[in-house]
Image (cartoon, rainbow, N blue to C red):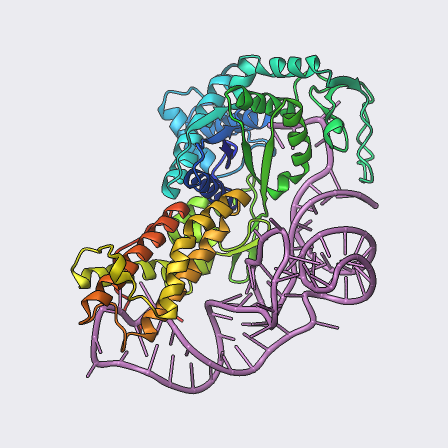
Amino acid sequence: MVEFVSANPTGPMHVGHGRGAVIGDVIANLLDWAGYEVAREFYINDAGGQVWRLAHAVLARATELKPGVPRVALDPEDYQGEYVRDVAQAWLDAGGDPSRPFDEIREPLRAFATAWILQNLIEQDLELFGIRFDKFFSEKTLHDERRLEAAVALLDEKGLTAHEILPPPKGMERDPDEELVEKPLKVVKTTRFGDDRDRPLYKTNGEPTYFAADVAYHFDKLSRGYTRLINVWGADHGGYVQRMKAVVQAMGGELEIILFQLVNLMKDGQPFRMSKRAANFVTLRELLETAGSDATRVFFLLRRGDMALDFDVGLAQKRDNSNPVFYVQYGHARCSAILRKAGVDPRWDPEAMQALQLPEEIDLIKRILALPEMIAAAAQSLEPHRVVFYLQETIASFHGYYTKYKKTERVISDDPRKTTARVYLVWALRQALANALAVLGVSAPDRMEAPEAEGDEVA
RNA sequence: GGGCCCAUAGCUCAGUUGGAUAGAGCGUCGGACUACGAAUCCGAAGGCCGCAGGUUCGAAUCCUGCUGGGCCCGCCA
């Protein structure tokens, strides 16, 4: 099972989520093509303090929108984004009553707000990206069904829990105002599996930690029979890798975690700051609407996942050949054009294939035949970027072949034997390109739009 | 202070169980369409593969140290 994105249902997705979405989706595709049965899952963090902040923000905005009700002030800690007004309006339209005290309505408000955001922001963006999940898994159901306790009980049985006074973090500058509570906490002994400290399952106030919910979630994954767990996380969660792997191992499973470095959004050479709480950030949707799904997908896979990515918004919006996706798609369209021109069905003729003797033809055949190997290797190493590089190299090879022989050894010629063989070669190549593009979730057009007229460019 | 990731051409990056002369794109310069799509192609220039050691017949690749950059280091979620 591949778990990815898992964006909080408290706001729109940003560009970093987009990278995780593409990496996760393509990893799942790769495993699928490599013969695995693969499930995609999205974990919804719909429990905890943040969703109350969201609910409160929605109420505050609702009192602004509806005249005649006492105003509820927006806390500085509340979500400040403009989208909260949309949620508030939708809540009012659905009959929400902002004159009631927050404590009475916060639970239905929370439920409404997270569901609305999930449906109208997150799922719509995923739709634009062409990503479908097999399951959206709600953290709240874990709490409601007391699954945390069940998971903790399992760890108890295995003797992997204890009550400990945790040492303060080493080397960090402590806030002098903060009082250190030295009280024993129930922990899971992740140190036995290579973590550098044991991790608390419950807070001093008795509530379970976020980590405890994650333990329960992964226990649930294992209980459902998944044998190979893969999580795709942003590098900012790097500190959680050890403990999560440790606890999954403790429960008898195995977890692989793919970390991808964060995306620096750039525009006109200036860094764009992304913050979910602040009102000013660039959403994934804006990016998808300007650059399109195909280009955005390829852009995210143009670098290895563990390299930080500078995403130049201006460049991504350009619809010319500086965008690699056009190069790749053009190659596919060119193959299609040749096959159209040939006007015959590609035919496998072992004898005629002997006519393919040019070194470039042998090279192309090798590349086509290498596709399953490449996919297997990319799936094995969980490195989706390899597919992009395969495509670029393969198409470059074809363009070179095409241009070199366009005056001497054309695909379509008077020689029926060579023509049969070469038409088949082009057909097979196009199929290979289409397959690789399908793995990336990128379209393989048979025609490209005509080039735009020159001269109306703004400098 | 500690952990993870990164450092390869002017710029952005590939190079994956260690293998021959380290590759591509962009950019620069110079070329190629009377015929299958020139959104393409060909050529040139451009490298102490961050630094210093080590392992090896052989290192961009593995080990150690150093330098520089990114992310992280709460009983938050």
